[in-house]
Length: 443
Image (cartoon, rainbow, N blue to C red; front, side, top):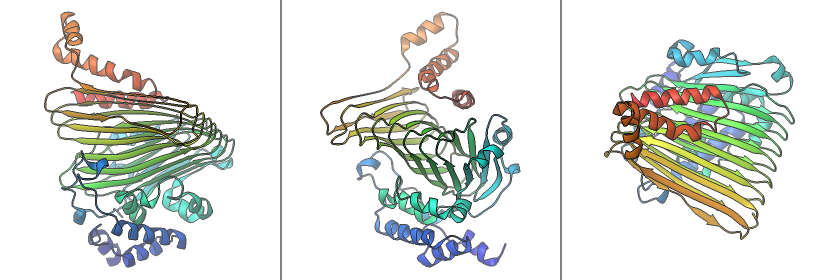
């Protein structure tokens, strides 16, 4: 490693970056001028945007005063398949996928796509490679349509310092028959700033599983991610986002889908890891007939803090959104869900639904659930609901009266609690992964 690279990796933290350093890195990575300009614009926005505090409504229940940006250095480290635990490495050997990407820190160490898909114009590539090889396509879509630099403090920081991630492009009327999978793994001490961008042209269809993880270690690292999902008219996307970060990771994400006319999005979230998570998750139904089905599964234990801020934005008439997030928590954990269905003027015939259910397994845990409606049209059907409470003592008594021990009975109740949302997940392998993660939390 050269002295220049060593200095960049060990000295430049979020607190010590400069415009000159960002421009120099962009040139070293061979990025086009427009990306370098975007990074510098993002850095300017970041410098002008106040850091979130408990006085800001979206952050009122999530305290990030302990996050020390002076210790956070976006990774430039590489890695290999050998860095992964065996169960994560096995994901690369799944025969029932059409393509795989493995990112370890800032490096892509494995890349595969079925030849017949590549021949049809499907692109499944590391984000850095995509910026260099498909500049016209990326320039139109990268943080210009879905997530934008002004979406928030961490969105702007991401725009300036992003590194790594996945680009998926499905051409018009191309159906990808098998799921595609990307795995991002961070090794010791590495902070990741990955970017996921999915563009599905009119009539295209694809399933994409996007997974993130690391071991738990001492210290503090950060994942600052952006996810952009762009569905053109009549497209269909099943997007599965699973994270099992180590308990030292502070995760901040901005995620937004733009769903066109008669397009269908099924968005699955699985949140099991991290020390603290704050995710903004937004489905914007931009064309008549657009549909978004949003399913979330999360389980917090120890002193984890998981905060999900969801938006279902109905911009066009005759659109449908259906959100079901279910969470369990125990020990001293805390979860927050803030949801909003917003119906814009003219979005008649909107059908919007949101529900958040939380199972609080002991007195020390706390779940905040805040649904919301903002309706500016008069011919709509919008409903919401939320609950947070302990295991039903009558259910527990019934199972124990049938000879089950208390822990066995609780396990059955928790597994049954998650069943309705797990049944919404289209991939059996993903359902199985989440079931195993839930069981591990209960042990």
